[in-house]
Length: 120
Figure 1 (tube, rainbow, N blue to C red):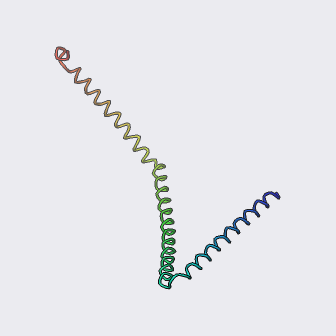
Figure 2: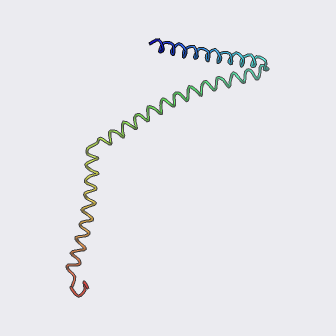
Figure 3: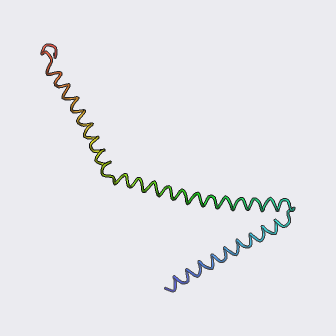
């Protein structure tokens, strides 16, 4: 039990260190940004805003894609379970077999109806 808590605490501490490192990087980026001319700072802020909007759009589109994929999977599953469709496919296969058999029997009948001299 203690090892689980120790492992959890170590992970939490690791996460905290990473978050602090990320925060430090953000502060460094802000300090560098402050040294840029105002026009470049404004352009950078606009690019950040565009990036955030695009990230939101990507998230929305991913959600929409997941919804559509779910609907497609549901429809495909419905088709797989559709007994009429399965029965139709089975009957189509039987029809194909019967047509081949019919062709074979017609050929046999044609040969049987031939004059014996003609059949040779």
